[in-house]
Image (cartoon, rainbow, N blue to C red):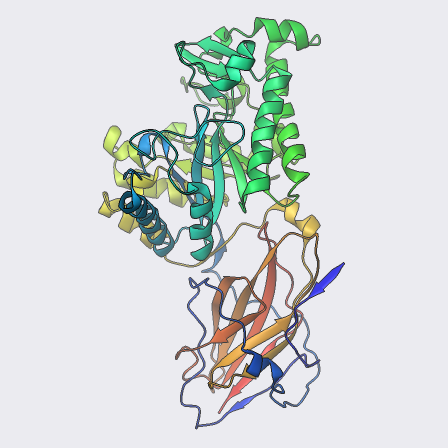
Amino acid sequence: MKTISKIALSSLLLASIGVGCRAKKDLVASPPEVVSVVEPPSMAFAAQEPLSLPALPASATWSPPMGDSIRQEMRAVWLTTAYGLDWPRTKADDENGLRRQQQDLIRILDRLAADGYNTVFLQVRQSGTVLYPSNMEPFARFFTSSGQPPAYDPLSFAVKACRARGLAIHAWLVTYPLASPKNAPHPLLQRHPAWGLKHKNATHLDPGEPGVRQYIASLARELAAGYDLDGLHFDYFRYPEDAVRFPDQRSYRLYGAGMDREQWRRSNLTRQLEEINQAVHSIKPYMQISVAPLGKLRKLPMLDRSHGWTAFESVYQDPITWAKKGLVDFLVPMMYYRDHLYTPFLQDWSQSVGRYVPVVAGLAPYRIVQDRWQAQTIIDQMEQERMMGSGGICFFREEHVGDKYPAMRQQIRQFFHRTALPLALPRGLEHRAQAPKLLRLVLEPNGERTVVWMHDRDAHEPPVTYRLWATLIKGNGERRGVLLAQGVREPHYRLRGEQFSGYERVEIGVEAVNSYGVSTPIDQALVITMG
């Protein structure tokens, strides 16, 4: 079933408009970071005839003027809620505390948007507790002094706040570790005590138990069904430290099926991802799935020194298989190392996994304080990530790139000062939207001017936003490319300001961008001749 915007448009494909000297309010687009949806044209406006303009022949495909300064890049942060490390710092014990708790999050998100970030990994589950009303797990105790849930849904609030600021939001889940003291076992282990194994003074769910994998997939399904999230992001998606001693003999005996133990353990994590994909995509086919594996993919024979634990050998993660099978949309390895423990492994990730899905380098500014690293170490690592063409950067954790550390914050702001587009993820090519058409500039009753367009899309397709580009042309032929806006959610955009002043002609094109960051070609352009 097709759904089409109800804005009345003519069949004009390419139009030229003379703006007289009476209209001294020059046309200017909203700045790129503005993502709030403009109000729909009034009923009085909708009833008016569109500006009468001469129809010109349709243009060939118009290329966005990206230039070298605009790149596809994930600019992310892990926002930690465990123990209120990043948020919440204020307890929502009464109406005033609740308001301050929400304002604290708003301040964080405002700062992230202002500093050039585009993605937030919000921790929604840790040790078997969650920060949203769940039918499966108890609420996290960090939001009120009593440990009871606050009088609002923090995840719903965070999703809406991120949407209003053009930030993608992924629910970050700590997957297998579970808090389950003897005097108050976790509800899951009250029902299924064999699913949780004691290891190194902690409880860890056993990935080899089919019931555990089904339970994790059901948690993912609950989140997908309940919230307008961009994706689910899995942390501690592995066997625990010193995994060779992990006591999973029972499940291996029952389900090992003749495989050697290492192979079986890797297959358990791969099956878990398959089950998560099935659970989530049966509800929302376009929701992204990602994992934060260990920062060192595998042992590198060329290193003539010890390099500690690795994802493949030590904790039985198999990111190359996950990427090849399309079980993840991107990976965020936790590369909390430097020098010979960083650069060779970043190269390995880029060459072995980056050919299938983007690799976003997880960096550790917290080590500037904890281990006395130089801030320049982090900047150098960011530069290396870009030189290798990786998918972006994610910082652990929010506090260490915020106001408490102004020097680090300023250097990141400078690194992010040019506009970034969201990553175009490979799975999105299967769901490419139709191109917007019938671009039109319409004069509103109040004298303002709005670009409007039609967009024909199937109801079952992933949601889309719109991205507007402009080429500004002076009388001497000098051209300047501008990204007018991205993240626009309605098929219209109001122009305002003085950005077009001094130019004789403006060409505007509109892309539809699906939830994977994959955009349409621009089949038509709107040409405005400035008078």
